[in-house]
Length: 177
Ligand SMILES: [Fe+2]
Image (cartoon, rainbow, N blue to C red; front, side, top):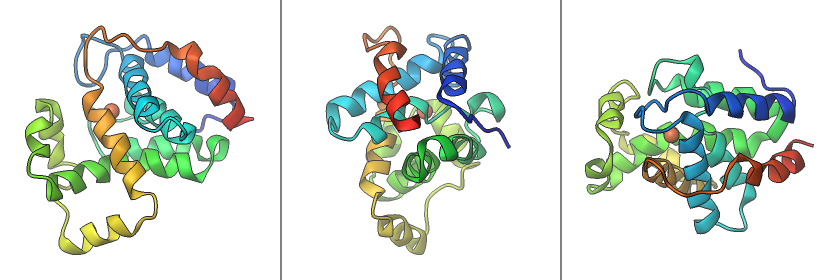
């Protein structure tokens, strides 16, 4: 299991994500996708720094897994649970189930998915069953998980003007301190 035990290790890993292409496209780096996701969540949920940080790092495990495979959500959650706590870990872990949830309950959602995201849907389990849908909504934080997912799906714009990694360092230090 990969573990990022300190804020410095996490920041070093994020800087590494700035050197590799996003799973979606070579047009921007993996870190750029996280920065866009975090900026969208900062605008949508300005009082929820944990959600914003979860958006920043939700794909931190992409280098450790095949593109789009569901393991990356759990691997990322496991990597930072000890450092950033259970809620951020759960938000990261939830971004793949949230995609399955939205495909199930929102007919317009599938049309918004990128081609890469459609291709990985089957490997991620496809649509939820009725029982799985109810279980998802029984999570008291399910709306935040869905908010992260919608920001994730929107955070794929080349050359988007968003705050750089330095903007997030105080929040990372306070959450990880
Ligand atoms: Fe993502």
